[in-house]
Length: 233
Ligand SMILES: C[S@@+](CC[C@H](N)C(=O)[O-])C[C@H]1O[C@@H](n2cnc3c(N)ncnc32)[C@H](O)[C@@H]1O
Image 1 (cartoon, rainbow, N blue to C red):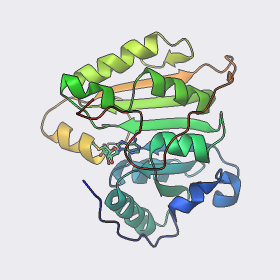
Image 2 (cartoon, rainbow, N blue to C red):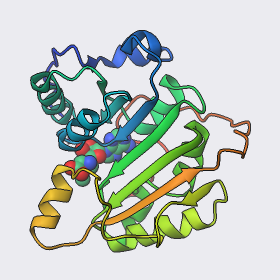
Image 3 (cartoon, protein in one colour):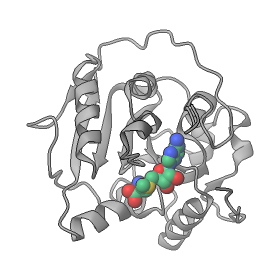
Image 4 (cartoon, protein in one colour):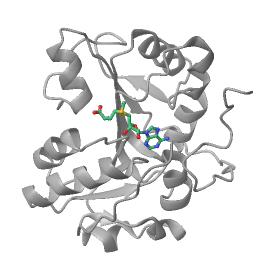
């Protein structure tokens, strides 16, 4: 589906050309506070609440969906927040082109597209390859939060994280049905109101394990991921 791109005029929006080079995070925010990232911010419910509660953290909120970025910016602008910047960007493209290794104090992923059909599961954003990439960009001790409404997605991610010694579970169980103090995204709110569970995971990147050398793949700026198979194989 082709998106109708509505121009976004907001002091909190970074246009796609910002990613023609690495982001100057200190210059963008005017301070050197820790930097956290929300991947797939949707319409901005979660980041609004999170960034309000953590004024000493800078946040990037990204989504490939233009209208979502627009709505997120409107919320941030009305709230007068200055510690969030919104980008219309694909997650891997942002990481490899915009950020430096070990630069993120936290990554938040809420209700990523579920791709419920078995034959479509390879399209899920969070898999072993992606978790490997994330640990390269998380700082030592950086935190990873993952919340989904899809039980088998939660289990797949939990199984994968268990196999990756760089990540340490921060909860009493690998998957929890509640995470006190964690804001709800729009999708989370909707599912919770319908009486459906949200499966939370919270991990920390090992502070002592070094950031090994990583060969960055060439990632296309386009919004389809070149390495994902299509329906036609
Ligand atoms: C199901 S929605 C959930 C939105 C929001 N997190 C929430 O919980 O309300 C998933 C969002 O992730 C975005 N998305 C999917 N793949 C992405 C990617 N590779 N990089 C950035 N955003 C992505 C989609 O455009 C969509 O807005």
